[in-house]
Image (tube, rainbow, N blue to C red; front, side, top):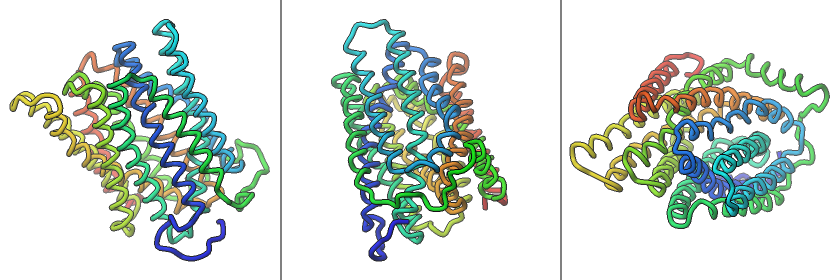
Amino acid sequence: MAPVAKTSSSPLAYPNFRWLWMGQTISTFGERFTVIAIPLLVYDLTDSPFQLGLAFIVQTLAILLFGLWAGALSDRWNRQLTMISADVVRALLVLTIPFVLLFDVPTQVTVYLVYFVSFFITTVTQFYAPSKMSTIPQTVPKSQLLAANSLDQGTIKLAEVIGYAAAGLLIAAVGVRYAFFIDSATFFLSAAFISQLRLPKTNSDVTKHGSITQSIRAGFDIIRQSPILRATVIFSAIAPIGIGAVFPLQVIFTRDIILVGEAGYGFLQSAISFGVAIGITVIGIFFSSVPRGRLLSYGTTAFGLFHLIGVLVPIWAMRELGLTGYSVLAVAVPFFVALAIANGAIFLGIRTIVQENTPNAAIGRVFNVLQVVSNIAFAVGMASSGLVSYFGATLLIVMWMCFMTTVGFGGILWKDLR
């Protein structure tokens, strides 16, 4: 860990954490513009739930192909340089979409480009994410780790709140093109902030000998030997199926069921990020002594219940009370904030489990194992978006949220997650 001058009650008192925090905050704000723009662009161009799901699945494919290798390599490489390079590459990739939109190219070519960019942005992110996660313990004392994670994730979610709302309004007003320019600019700013970190030149206890395959195997050995890590991986192979299933369905829910359009979709995503920020902040301050596995299980249970209610109550309000437009959205928002607060418990539980139970030199590998496993489950869920034509979006959401609630109860009863 980099030397620190004094003990402080705030992680922001430590310059290295402060620079990292600022870089992540600004890039997170910008990323929301692309996160909103891509599914809306694909759905506008194709009007196909399957193509909409495919836009997310290609991201998962990148994680499956490169996640394990990226985690092992990030533990060997200079983490600061890895994060800077990832930001610059992602900035350049994002710029290709508005460039192509300037020309009159066939619709399918544009859709393929979006898939291509999504795939490679996600690939590069596989190197950035474990590098950042491994760097946080080097920027603050161990006593500040939970607080640093809470502040980092809480701020990210607040940045998402603002970014989602701004993106929805911008796209509704002037179209998707400018969203990509904003995202690219914030990636460049993030790289500039992260360049200010002053970390040790080499990662402590990192072994650069042996093959990448051996490094990956060592990461699996660490998971196998730790009951809570092992349980977390298994849990992460099941619960994200439900989250992946409803992720593309939220676009259909806002646009085709409650009829609030692009801006409404942006506001709903803002509400979700706001709720996650509240959950992470409150848990970090008041529930730091709760076992991390319990946070994960309770959060999953509550996520399923509140998402179920958050879909059924607005539909009931439309049919029985005659509400329309943003009145319906106002009914949905409190429940989506509540499910997001629960999601904050999931985020913080998984993140801290990995950091507290893994040697620093192997955090990248263990973290990316979890990422790969959870994204396989996520892809399985997203693949169900093609079933909308047979069951409808509402019924699919209800089915998957009942599944999530059941998985959460199972986690509560699992002794390794207590």
